[in-house]
Length: 231
Ligand code: ASC
Image (cartoon, rainbow, N blue to C red; front, side):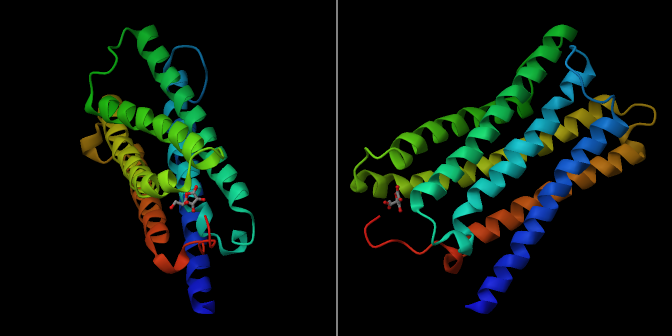
C-alpha cells in the first residue's frame, strides 16, 4: 500500500510540474516570441486564447479529473470532493468561454472568417460538450435530487465523456498550435526550424506528456477513492 502511495505521489508531482510548465511555456510563447497580451482587437487579444485554454481547459481540467484520486482526501466528504471537481471544471469553462470571445473578437476586428478550420470545429465541439457535461454532472451528481439508480446508470457515461472531452481538447490544442505557427512564422519560416517553432513544438510535447500522466493516474483501479457502502 505504501509503495502504491509513493508511486501515486511521484506521478502526481510529475503531472503538476509538467502541467504548470505547459502554462509557463504558453506565457513565454505569447510574451517573448509573440506580441504580448492586451484586449484591443489585435494579436495581443488573440494571445489570451492559448493562455486561457492551456491554463483552464488543459491544466485545471486535468487536475479536476484526478481530484478523487488524492488519497488524503478520501476522509473528506464526497460532497466536498464533488464541489471541488465541479468548481475546478466551472473555472475552466469560464476561462474557455473568455478564450473563445477573445478569438472571435480578434477575427471580427481583423475581418478574418470564423469557424472555417478543423481546429475551430473540434475546439467548439469540445467546449459545447464540456458545458453540457458540467450542467449534467451538476444536476445529476452534485444536487441531491437524482435517485442512486439513475446515478449508477449515468456514472460510466460521465467518466467516459469526461476523458473523451479531455482528449479532444488536447487534439484541438495540437491543431491550434500548428495552424498558429504555420500562419505566423514567415521569414524565417516554420520549415526552417526557427527558435519559436522548436519552443512551441516542445510546448505541444509537454501537453501530450501531461495528458498521458493524467490518463494513467485516472485509469489505475488501485488509486480510486474507496466507494462508500451506499453511495
Ligand atoms: C454519485 C456518487 C457516486 C456515484 C454512484 C453511481 O453521485 O457519489 O459514488 O454517483 O452513486 O454509481
